[in-house]
Image 1 (cartoon, each protein chain N blue to C red):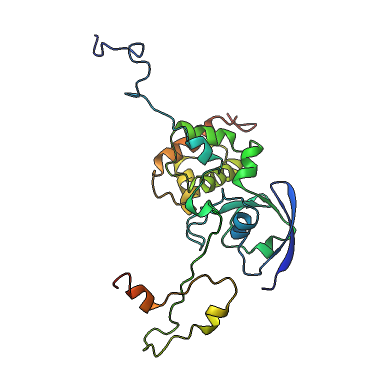
Image 2 (cartoon, rainbow over the protein chains, first blue to last red):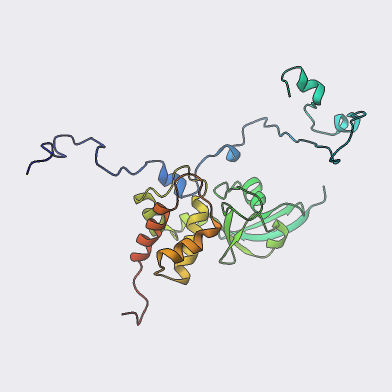
Length: 88
Length: 162
């Protein structure tokens, strides 16, 4: 008969055996979540990768002059710059 | 860059703006209007995270350009939530824990609402079929289908139904 000697009155705050609705689900259900791509921190910069338009080619040189002169460019990094901080 | 003037109604509010011709509608809604409840997942019409209502029909926000929406009425998860259009579905999703991260949820809700408008009492198979264009990558589909079934049970049967 008494399989479970404890009633919910004995443990009113227990999650055991209960379906627990998540408090943050309501926000997510209204489209009010804050995912990384939803955030706009001050001084946010964007990164753009320029890849070779050629499937198989030898790099003879990279001319950065026009990119450096473009307004709003904060930093340019080519292979040689990355080689100083990480290996391929 | 050259921009094109557009006028549209977003969640009942008239919006006049200027957009790049290449800008997708979802990017316009998120970046220009700050309506970040509509999400960008695959950017090629597969995942359904960017689902919005365009003149009342669900469309992929990533497959339509902002300039194409000129003169149209758009509703997003924010507007639909505020006017209570999704309340029974949202309550059922909450009760069934039909979400984890919540990224796909706005699209799921819009698709489910459109299904229930067309067929107030769909079978589980019909629900599955209707959600085939909305991907969930964490919680799985069972709870979502349970929730939509429960929301459908709360809808009174159509006139003439036994």
